Length: 374
Image (cartoon, helix red, strand yellow):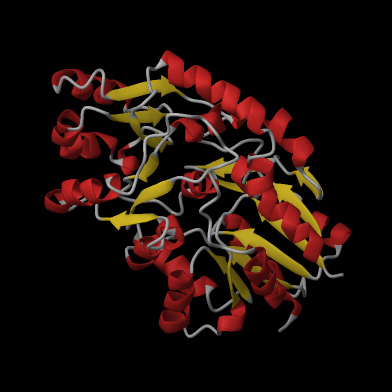
């Protein structure tokens, strides 16, 4: 079994199953360069015991303007002696791997995980990133991307071979998320009672309240529909810098009973919200992927997903609708069409709500086995 060493920013709950599955294909070791996700303070004490692979933290080094360089990478590579090494994005970590190889200090095949959506691929945020990306594609052996669309973009734009590109969406294991239905149903029933959701058509959002999520725009665009549909409620689970502006918008549009902001949740307390919902929405204007879409589908929710989110690749005719949140003229129509697909969940019953995820484990294994060749 080949050794795979991955340098990764930090452990997030939606990465656990992917790493554990990868450990079945390779002798995996993951080195985290942050102790937590910078914009999410996840409870690491609950996440780390779920890991089934070797891991460590490399936290000493330099940081500037959100970028870090960690001391000791070469030492870890020499000690681990892996067959393949993966960095992340076009970061200083990845650039250091390229430098080590060009200097002849390491001889392993190297690659990087790139979480860009197809929209981000076409609209690179800065000239600097454009240059670094163009340089890196000529130096790396592998790229791990989130969708077939991004894979095709890299093949057509940079002349990469299909065998160099691993398509691996950020997916979680349904059995792990749904493994305690009695407890989830109990928590969900409490939410349903506390927020008067029984008999309501609940449209759920989960995430940070930041400009990229475009929640104020979305609320403004659908406010008339919220008033028209007596049984429709929008629940925004999360928190962030735009919370106050959202609260003002809700107040000014008389939506206090139609838009609910219960706060931020993790683990089972978060997953129980999916049981309360009739459908899910992600209206982001920019989103590398959107792991919450995968979670919603796992819990049997159809999804109204922004075309600008990488997770739009998970949406097919059977499990949701993809829409353009920038097109104000069509947002209401798309939501109306989506609402017709939904049912009110008067009874919280996870057993009779099958997963709507259409991606299979065989596809995951087939893609990642590309590392065995080349």
